[in-house]
Amino acid sequence: MGLREEAEAVLAETMEDPDMFGWSITLTDPSESSAEMYGLSADISQMIDPDTGEVITGRVASVALRMSSIVAAGFTGFPKNIAETTSKPWLVTFNDILGTEHTFKVRESNRDRAMGVIVCMLEVYRT
Image (cartoon, rainbow, N blue to C red; front, side, top):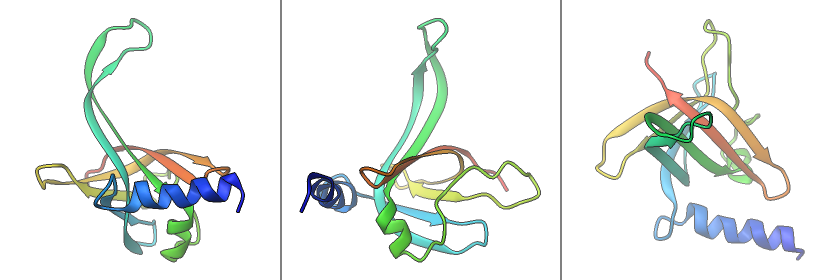
């Protein structure tokens, strides 16, 4: 097994094991097919303004999922931004640490094909 395969196997443990960093995440595609999987999630309310260097209040949410898990869940594509407002977006739902559910739409997705991970930047989704 090469280093990339070993790294992907380690990701399976660290990202998807709920006793480690794995967090339950529901992924829903535009056809409304969904699957529960485990990955990393973030939802923070402070960030640095890149123009001024000042701390500002905002909301930055993201998830990181293994690409192989998305394929294994039966999805035929990977999460991405759907710009048309007449089309359904890719959705991501997860609970915060207090158990409150939050649903987001995928604003941007970045695939690391070498490691087999996709990071999705999210925005709050309101129906």
